[in-house]
Length: 197
Image (cartoon, rainbow, N blue to C red; front, side, top):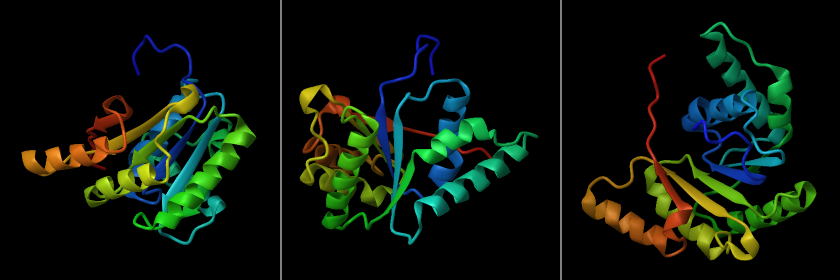
């Protein structure tokens, strides 16, 4: 986060595809915790985790808190409940197969309910913390479920982790797939580094 960002971003929902995966545990949740520590989370936030596992929202919250505690313990730190509890309170788990169109209908319904409850302005960030073979599938299903439209001033963003294709041709094909459903300014392609334990 640059020094230019002195105020938290707009209220939004963050949907994490691959909610039970390593990337969510090791990168996304610690990043959200650190943003909370710096006072940089939106005032109103909803975290929706989507994965194929049978898990309750409470189990998802508990598992992530336990893993965060293990990470922080390596540097002699502990989880500060004043920071964690608001994050946990915003978390909802949705069981869904990434290739099942019905899962995206249920996601759309859930997002609509949560948006009304928390007054998020229809803003949604979709994070693809999944294996790269699902990138095009998830983007396509989101588009088919009309979840990527930005009408009425709301924003919709898609974060794609590496690898973005395995060579030039597959990268171009993935890019073309994403651009069927999103505008270029809605797509964020990022790399990450997971350090050794």
